[in-house]
Image 1 (cartoon, rainbow, N blue to C red):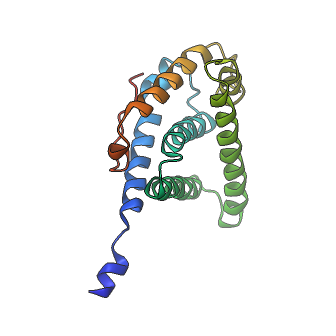
Image 2 (tube, rainbow, N blue to C red):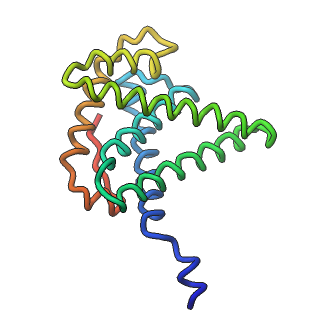
Length: 176
């Protein structure tokens, strides 16, 4: 009985994992790559995953202890998945730590940059500059205005969703 309680996943952990699965689904959407020009590369996919993760974390921020626990679980699941992906790509055990540190720093930097861009809204210029610099780093960035519109619509859609749904692991993304 005691062992069952100790081994049972905490609700926030299960919700974080469910939300991460939704991040993955949305980040793999064909329209992001075909219509919005996100590069279909390892870097482009990392940026797409990071963007959707940041959007969810932004929505959950400041909504109490459960939202904080869910956010941490979502982030932890993301990091664990990155670790697994690196290993599947053949990165050696000794190099995984260095790569994870680099990816963690990149994610942290992206989060700070997105926060700064969101503070400047409704001026979308900083957001477009950020997307051009990160997601479209290897392209001319001509598709950035479309992605800016998508990010703003997604952010608004997330803000309109009841927090209870998100804390139950359910999220409706803006269609691309």
